[in-house]
Length: 310
Image (cartoon, rainbow, N blue to C red):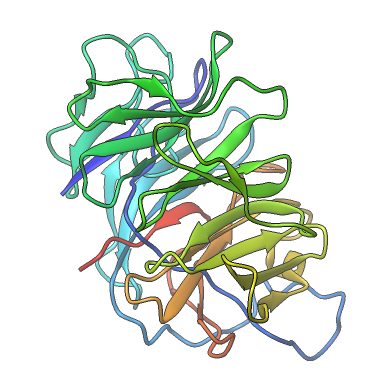
């Protein structure tokens, strides 16, 4: 399978590997409610698979992060993309001139190549369900919003208009719609820009993921410091996966959480996003009903993971 990746602004770079992943959590924790859970002992996950992620080598501005893969039991740790600056959102790669540019590579890290003949700016690339298109968000001073390009680099087009609020975190659902965050709410839109629809209300959404069947969102509600799942159609009841989520951040770190579903929708994984110091967390996992909190052993500074289908 091919993987899209690209770079950040200037000296930094981003990488994002678009497939389907998991999101982690817990329903309640005992002990001192003010204590961090970031280093608490947790069992090894029982869910099997291979996870791709950004490993923070040196936190903060001026630091760097590389792209790794690891099995859920902590074995088979391997670097796919190493760089002197930041590589994150597995699916992005450095551009020679420092501009954010979409690239692709094989899932084993080989055959890295530019997606287009000229630099194609973009962040947080995600594949369409059929593998023929890539959605990403753009904010390079010339244009912003959600954009789509064909997997061969042709057909570049803008899906949502330029906006001061910014449209970020695109997520391609199984029904063909692209979900994204605008002003802390989740919206959905067709790839041609039609049928724009607001999906969530009453949550401060930092990041999210759509379930493989397209019926459920896993969201980070930063307003209420929790991770939960909610039905896309508004029916049913939310399920809390991780309450007081900030306790699972390393001491002093404030950030968003990036939830991701497992390919079979039975589990979720959760790591930090990119706010507040670029420090990263362990890879937490939880069952879709909120039980069975666990953590992948041997990796402690993870950001922006993805869980490829087997």
